[in-house]
Length: 153
Image (cartoon, rainbow, N blue to C red; front, side, top):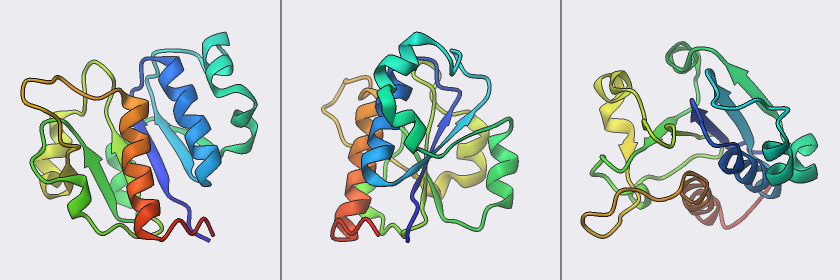
């Protein structure tokens, strides 16, 4: 069984995280949140947007994403509006890790410096700022699932 992983680096908006929890539930994916979070996991907003899906999703909280990535054997990719390579140009594996930055700050520069070849973007029209975080996660996650012929096992 595959287990795609979504990592949110310092997420700030609980409704986005709740929506991503729902998406993880229906795709069999897991979620990793990097501290600091801009909300409490026990807040009403996260519970409302995540609904009863929260109990069905493996959610881990880490303190240092850089250390986590240094120790993983799984292929990982960063998604940023500032990247050039398209997300559709990547052949994902069934244990890929997809990393997204916070809603207002994006990803830290250190990640681009260390792993710039692993950055990809979701194309948008010129002068557009960015796509909503939960929408971006769904786009990338479903591209990976499309590559696996939507085999959820």
